Length: 109
Image (cartoon, rainbow, N blue to C red; front, top):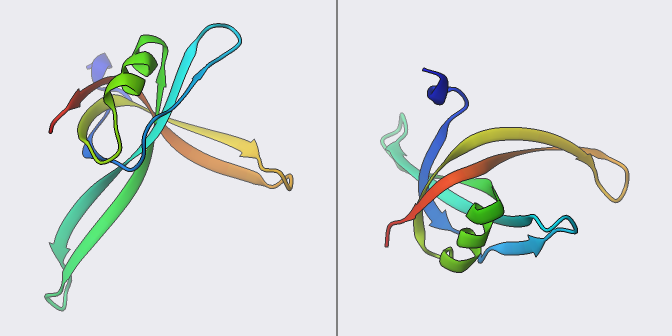
């Protein structure tokens, strides 16, 4: 059961090309976002399309592969873990963000 703890699996479409950096320590970092879509009918019988955006982070070899293979508009399946962090913006206001640290991905189209 340990490998079920903090495990996220999503299928969605990439909203942009990967932002890729080599850090000073030589580590690779990739950032990108995907959109997931849920379609349902509300209590009035109207069709509702709910789109959610998810921030993805890749490190090391995963980041290298994300940069090569992930392109805007592609459908991708990802598996990773959910991470939360805080930071101060330029005005000194504390911001909160959630990210999925990608362990594996698979291009679907």
